[in-house]
Length: 285
Image 1 (tube, helix red, strand yellow):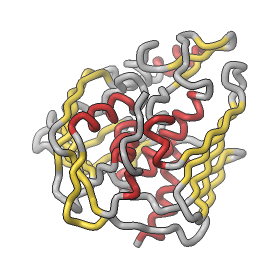
Image 2 (image 1 turned 120 degrees about the vertical axis):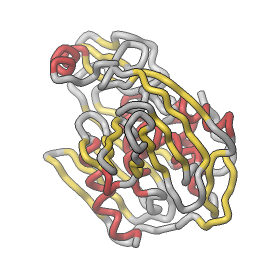
Image 3 (image 1 turned 60 degrees about the vertical axis):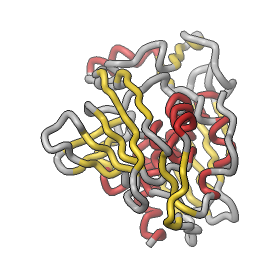
Image 4 (image 1 turned 45 degrees about the horizontal axis):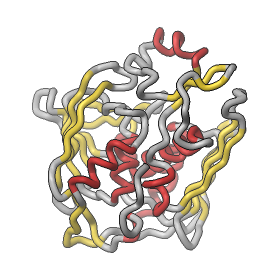
């Protein structure tokens, strides 16, 4: 379990970057490809950027909402003729840690899944440390509410005096059922970052036949079946909904510093998360 260290990331008045370099390697959840990833400090006002070291010219892909291409079971970004997929857990960890500016060097098309949560990313960032930069961090307060529906699923951003994230899920599996959770940014390191991605045993063969979850395993994802969890124990009784909230925060991180608001999601997806971010973006100008 990770303990929150100091004030919430959003409370910092100036931008921040890493104090040094951090490295990881691992398999991509969907591609099954082994990839190395390095976080490097970056100058103020450059934001979070991916660099594909394995491609000619080492193209840069900005971690911005405008770069979103696909949201099928993960968020994929494109830029300068290149792409990178499954960015949400890493971006959530960077946002939790308060890293505004970072160069993310990667040797393949997908961010490693590691243990399926943001915990390994956050622990590595915390080991290296965070340093302030001489540039102000923008502080935007949401002015108008935004809600996007898709059937009975929805995402909302509501003007509020402090930033809060609330998420609800409802699955026809007895081990999950209906779950809700709600946290402020200062609670995310301890209460949300360790929550792992999850899937359903009955869908594994189909998804693999579609070229998805090629790198998925019982070591990097929780698997639920009609009779219960295939690979317990859970880190939290409501770990699935906490992971969905983690996904939301990672997708909202594509806005840079999301506006102060109460974000509420129910039965949502990466598609709805990123649609909400797109709808919010004009209020940040």
